[in-house]
Amino acid sequence: MWQAALWLGENLARDDALRASMNRHLEDAARSVAPEFAAFLTRHISDTVKSWDAREMLQ
Image 1 (cartoon, helix red, strand yellow):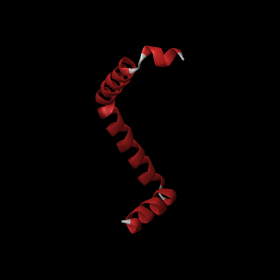
Image 2 (cartoon, one colour):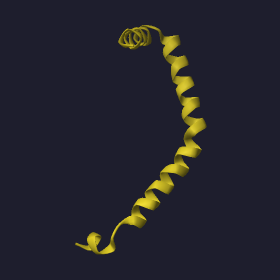
Image 3 (tube, helix red, strand yellow):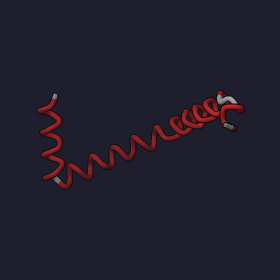
Image 4 (cartoon, helix red, strand yellow):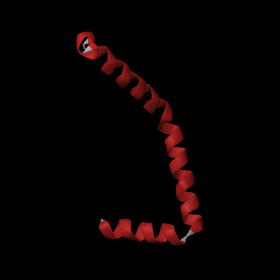
């Protein structure tokens, strides 16, 4: 596993085309999951704030 990570890092450092391709794929993946992640994060924050005790927050 470490050898694969090392190989990838070394090749990304040397190969501009590979690095650009990897960036494009990561950006596409992030865009595709962003709406679901945003909805999850919004729900999580809202639920967390709702669970706070108002008296504890005022101290």
